[in-house]
Each structure stands twice: as structure tokens, then as C-alpha cells.
Image (cartoon, rainbow, N blue to C red; front, side, top):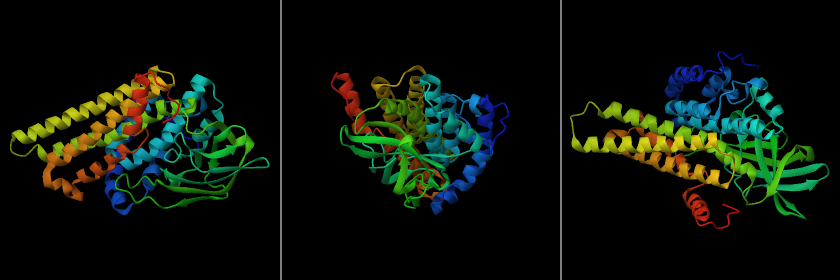
Length: 380
């Protein structure tokens, strides 16, 4: 389906749409959370209004929003429904990465970007399974490879059209090699196993995707890299993806702050309450500052270890501040925060996902320390 955009270059237009749709998303959110149900209706609304191709360049039929504008859209979406925003960020970051590579590296991704715009397809990421080490097995056969793998944390799986993934091939000459490729979700041997029953972000549909004897032709292998080592592709992904993903979590933190103030501002004046709320304000400001930093780094830098270090350091600071915000929201609200009906506990649970995206704290500190000490860095 080809979407006709209305003033598609205007960020304001899209933020107004988020606000309109977001009220409906927020109303649906609690029921979706309690039933572990994917946000089908919210995705249908996003697709119908053209959000799927927000990051596709206008030359290829998309809205052409830049990286920082996409971050702002996801931040605002995260204030209404964290699950919708996070799942959608996993699609958006792949579109944005392809658009960046087309613009800056002349990468041959025009076909993919046009498909997103013209066919309104949803791209899935297996990034939860496939950091530098990769996962799954690729066996060489005539004309290509046979893939067997289990890809976990595939957010948006129930509505995905195309899975961007990888598998490990034991190359007789080069050794363990990670192959990158795309697999249509309709391909023979692809199945979804409904495993997603989680603490928070319960409606992202981040199920396992099973690849059983899936054939991938040689011509469909988009890239190869040594297993476990940093590669230019991952520096690009780090630079583009993590500001987008963590914009969602700052949106969740903002919602927790706003919900908390709504519930406590009419209470009698109390010095301890003002202390807690003041601390909450400090932590939310810290989250915004760290997020703005990594968005600025992505806008002004080229992919590489130094840029990745800046992004991952900022990601750690954002995560810490977001988690502090929701802790303080629970504390300041008091015992009523424990009730599901108040909404604070859902935001608290959703925010916990900020802990788990790469690089986690230990790996991030190791990378930062290695660079500061001028030691060799080849893996994480």
C-alpha cells in the first residue's frame, strides 16, 4: 500500500499524529499488558498513517525524517505505550540504518527502502540473539546455505514481514564467519514460537523465531564478518540504533514522572515528598541530557570505535537515570503505586528493559576502559 504523505517533511505533523494516536494507545495499553497480547491495533494504526516509512528518504517514497526527528517521534510514542514504541523502534532503527548507509556510503539498499515505502512492510531484527558473536548454524550446500537457528527477543514478530538476521558458518579457510541475510517471514521453515511472557514491555511480541532448514542463496548473503569481533556494520548499527531505542525509555521515564506528579501534587506539603520529587526531576534531566548527547554524537560522527564508545557510554547513563526515575516514582507515589490501576507499576516494569540491550554495563565499562588505556579492542 502506497501512503500519501501530508506535509511529510514536517516533524510537527508526525508529533501531532503521535499525540492523537497515543491517547488511544494509552487506553489499550493496560489491557494489552495484563493479557500479554501484542499491540496489533496500534501497529495497524501506525501502518495506516504512514509511520512505517518515516525514515525512508523522500526520494524513495518515504517521509524522510532525519535521525533526531525519529528519536523525538519514538520518545513521544514511548510516553503513551512503551511496548508499541519499543517494538516499533526495532523496525525504525533498521530503516534508519539503511537510509544512513545509502546517504553516506552509497550502500545498495534502495530496493529495501522502496519496499518499506511502497509495500508498508515491517522489518524484524534478531539483534537480541545476534550481537558480535551471532547465533545459529549455516551449512554450505549447492548454491547457498541451509540455516538452523532460534532467534530470541524478536520484537514485533507477530506482524513482521522480513527478518534481518545472521548465522555462523564454519568457513574452512577463514574460520567461524557470521553471515548476514534477510529471510521473509513467509519462507518455508520459518516459525514463531510464542515465548514472550515477560516482566515488562509485555506487548512487544518479542517471541522466538525458529529457522528450520531455511535455504538462503549465495546471492542473498548481504555481508560476512569474523565471529566475535567489532565490524564496521556494528559501529553503524550502534550509532543509529541506540539513540532510537533509548528515546523510548526516556519517554517511559517522562510518563512515570508526569503520572507521579498528577497523583502527589494535591497532597499536603511535605519536605520529604519534595525531596523525592526533586530527585526524580534531577534523574529525568540526567536521562534527557545523556539521550541528547548520543543523538548529537550520531548526527556529527562517523561510525567507529570512538563513536561506539560515546554511544554506549551515553546508553549506560540513560539507562541508569531512567531506572532511577521509576524507582523514585514508586517511592514518591507511595503504596498506591503498587496498584496496577494507577499505572506507575507498569511504567516501572517497562523501564526495566533498559538494562538488557547491549552493551550492558560490564561490557560497556570494559570497552570504555580499553579505549582510555589505549589497549587493543577487537571484541565485546
